[in-house]
Every structure is written in structure tokens, then in C-alpha cells.
Length: 409
Image 1 (tube, helix red, strand yellow):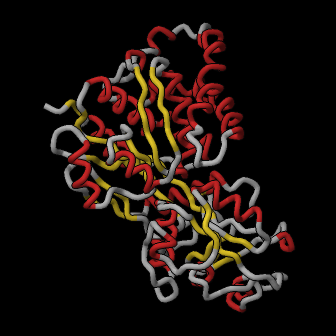
Image 2 (spheres, rainbow, N blue to C red):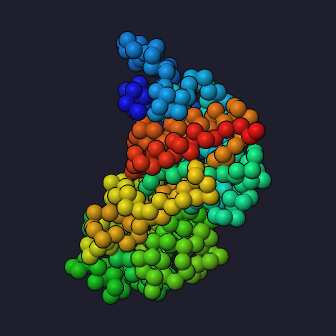
Image 3 (tube, rainbow, N blue to C red):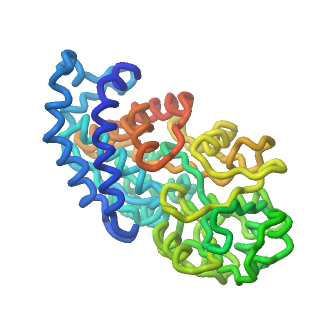
């Protein structure tokens, strides 16, 4: 999508500077914080845009998206408000998408409430939003339910738009500046409540020479239904199945081992870890702030999180078919053979209907989802959230799915 990148990247980068400021001012994930965040992001730069674009002789042509790469969408003609809700892990990335999308579609607005993956899917399936953000693809029963809320009888599809490492942040001031290494068995033991003190021999074995404090471990988990929890527990279940015996779960308190401390949404987990010495948790890496994070055991070594390492693990993962030719998901490889990948990664989806009731909603959904999956959209989320870009192969598959979205006949 070279033409579109040339046309849009400069204005998106400029607007993302404002997005970074707005993100710092955002409240907790339990708030519908995105509407206030959009004001500084969308409105402030708008006054400067003519000055930035005026010298470009090609500006008039710049309004015409490349049909092959942009689905033939005329962004300037798209108008209205698109409502989404879901994964709090997407909060930072979504701000980048909102700002970038409004820079190319100034008559359109995207509102997003980061209430958590489970809450977002429930709201979507209840008809309360146009799309959901979720760190887990729709389950079979949820897909069946989507036929009742989507127009037509084709139901909803999963679009894997966001790749991010899940960090394992901790609060141990006595080892500040040192790297804490944790193998899969140790991480699983901590969250299964079988390793309860930081001086445990298993932790010491991962960290020779590190002066670990004699301090009780406080494992912090999500208190709400969470796709981040599902990805984190899927990692423990695959990488340390003898220690973590609960499988991949979304609802920790209902289906997990109990104990520890629960925090609402991503911000609640991060706040609890930051507030309690000896605490450790899991959260989308874009939102842990200044907290240190453990290096994770991989193939006999230890790997710190990074977008590149998360992207490599997803590139080595299997893409599985969905309920129709437009629906698919990615089964993340949790046990890589090489120490250049980070296995605690999440693939977060946008869940949309294949058919909507009216053309205006179809146009909004197709335009926003096309932007999110584009090179410019992926660069926007990388700038605001440190996410990894989806591969060109996945981009092409997503574009095919978006092109199929239509008004129910």
C-alpha cells in the first residue's frame, strides 16, 4: 500500500505525538476514557494540518485511497460514529488507531470502551456495539449467538489485528536494576500458589548470584473475564502443564486456583503490582509503565519481552480456519525451539458482523478495519502501544474478510 503510506504516514506520525500526551492523561480502564482522549488527539492537530499539507503538490490526489490496498474506500466520504468495546489490552493501540483514522476520515469518529475482552464480547452480542475488541476469538456458542445480533444469518468473524507481548511485571525494590529470570515452571508455580516466597529454590536456580528478598509473593490476576488471562494461562498450560493444571481460562476467580489478589482490567493489575512490594502480575506490555518485567525462559535461555520477539512467535504460529472462509484465528506457539521469540504474546481480535443492517455502518466498519490492518494503521498502534505488526500474509487474509462485509440482503 505504498501510495497510501506516502499520503498518510506524515500526518499520522504528527498526530500520534498528541496521542501520546492524551494516553498519559487517560483514566483507569473501567472508564469510557476514549471519548475524552480523542478530543486532544483529533482536534488539536486538525488546525495545523493545512500548514503541514499545503506545500505538498500532490495533496489533492492524496485524498484518493489506492483501491487495491484500501478496499476501494473513499475515507473522506465516510461519516458517522462507530461504537466498540472490549479488550483493555488494546487501549493504547486503539488510541493510535483512533487518531490515525480520524486524520484520513475527518468526518468519522470511533469510540471504544476498554471494559475487558469478556465484557466487550457480551456488549457486542447484546447489540450494544458495532464491534468488539477481544484477546480471545469468539467461542462456538458466542458465534452462534452472533447470528441473533448480526443482520442476515452469517454471524460474526474474528479479525486478528493486534499482536503484543504480555509482560510479567513485579515489585522487588531490593533487586532494582537487576534482571529477574523466571522459567515457565516457576511462573506457573507462582500463579498456582505452589511457590510462595521469593527465596524459593526454584526462583534462585533461575537467578544464580541474585540476592532475592525473603518476602512473600503476592500474585496479582485479573478480577474480570479477560482475554489476557486466557492467553497467559494458555502459556502456562502449554509450557508448564505439570504445574499449571487449570488450562486456558478467562475467569480466574471462577476457574483458577484461588488466592492472590484480583485487579479490574489491565490498569487494576498494574496498580496492584505497583502498590505492593513482593507482588507480581501479568499485563499487556504497553501498559506496565515503569515497572520492571521478568525475562521468560525459552529454549534454555531467558528472553525479555519486545514487539519483535512477540512478532516472531506469532509468525511461527498456526493459523486455523474458522466457521467460514472469512473467519480465522491464530493459535500462538507457546513452546518455541529458539531463544529469539517471546512466548507470552497475545493476538487480539476485532470481532465484526459479516452483514449489517445499513450501508452507513458497513462503510464505517470497513473503513476503520481496513485502516487498522493497513501498514499505516499497524505503524500507528506500534507508535502508541509498542505492538508488533501483523504479517503481510495475515494482512491479505484480513483484507479479504473485510471486503466481504456487506448490507444484509
